[in-house]
Image (tube, rainbow, N blue to C red):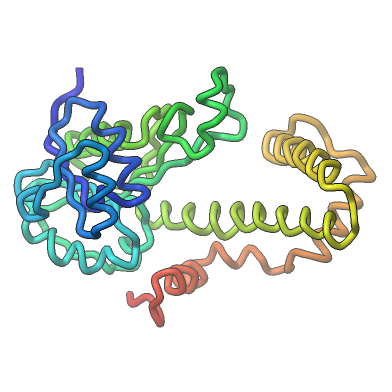
Length: 284
């Protein structure tokens, strides 16, 4: 049986804040919702939730979920972390600001980061609701990644329980370091996977509007072959044909730079995150 905790959601009316709040509202936790923007406050109230002043909400919270944009985290943590109770957890939902050292810390407040994996392309969906939930946090099960700068098993358990609640339904929670989480998000999944997704859409647009292929035909063959490509490439379900391997080599030579794996170096990670956070550079 899970323990009831006091949870404050800061940024409760934002895009991610609403998702987090919707899920927490289904739990037995004592949840307080904080939102500054007029639009966000309206969304929170329209959802039937009561707004609480930030200082009051974080004062006795066991865990403070900071569902605010990366660019706002420096100012928000500077204001709120000093007001948190000793032993509480400050949980951000992206690793960039934490890895860049922009967050206000206290020796007696635990820093943690968590991020959803989103439902896997290989997830065995069984209901229309699961098929419709491509983002996760509604019906389709997903994994989550978490990082906790504390070795106390009770703290880790609190973070895992909260992560399972805010991203529900959750299959597994994988624990890594904050740096490793930054290497996963953005490098692996945004710099590589999301970029490739956008590139696929650009290629589809080129086939339709430049080459003149009928849209229905282009979409059908791309959607189906993308599934095959991912299943073969990531799981080895079937070998690519010899002719396909030749075409793949041509694509790599034409599109991919030879030194592309440099994005996984520490200095390139710093450069990427500095651009995302609109900093000249990340100080160490």
